[in-house]
Amino acid sequence: MPRFSRTLGVGLSLVGILLLGGCLAADTSPSKPLTLASLAVEKQYVAPDCQGEQCSTVTISALEFPQSPALSEAIQTRLLTLGMSISEEAAQPAESWEGYAERFFALAEEDNRTAPGNMTSEALLEATVHARHHDLLVVELNSYVYHAGQAHGLPLTEYMVIDERERRVVEADEMLLDGQEAAFDALLVQAHQRWIGEMGFDDQFTANWPLSQSHNIAPLENSWEVTYNVYEIAPYAVGQPTLTIPLEALEGVAKPRYLGRGR
Picture 1 (tube, rainbow, N blue to C red):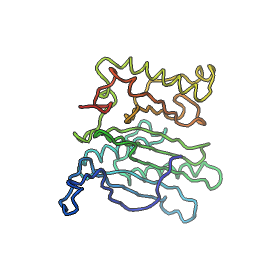
Picture 2 (cartoon, rainbow, N blue to C red; picture 1 turned 180 degrees about the horizontal axis):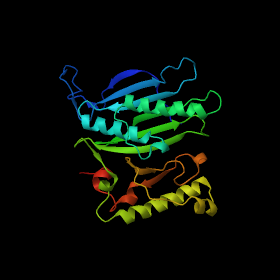
Picture 3 (cartoon, rainbow, N blue to C red; picture 1 turned 135 degrees about the vertical axis):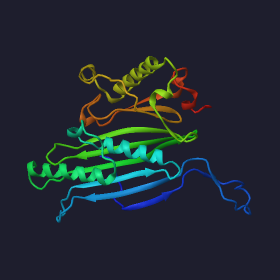
Picture 4 (cartoon, one colour; picture 1 turned 45 degrees about the horizontal axis):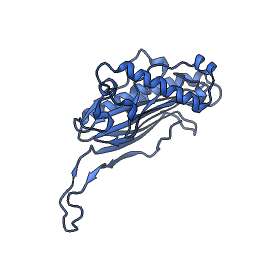
């Protein structure tokens, strides 16, 4: 289960400030931020009319960008979508944190009518900075949703890549050179084979849990990470596997911009 802060309120975190002329003690001119400033958003909601210690909860630990409302909205929308239960697959995501909590507690009330004992439902939505380099910001979005009566909760992870120069979200297919999708998939197969060996799994495991395509990519300074959610390529007990592709293998497959060079 991902770890979430339970602190309420909103805190300001200015990131990546370079001081102009920092070597001169007498220079007190204001610095110019070269990267996006972020606001840490912490909220917790408790099921209404719950008086005991065992209450269903919704916890939010997200990010906002005061310089870009569009990016703030993108993070919120993706988290609200990531936190939807399987039963809501055909529904539209909520439009606000409060709207999500109201919908979740309505489902929790139904859960309580069928769940044994005093079990409670829980939802946690989190956005954290996973990496920052070469004017790229990689945000990791996590959700953990548990409904009373289930054997276990469902964790989900999604990466959101932001071009800080253009202040926009970069989709996975934009990071690949034209016509290199098959080459990327081949690298993913190699990464999967390395992971299988590291985990000590046998051929039967691979047959039962074959590799599937994924563009859930985090472009890091020295490699790309591709993370799968539970049940995608492994059973729940294995968790969320992350396959790693070194940058040198991506030469001629990915655009230089996402290998730490140029635009």
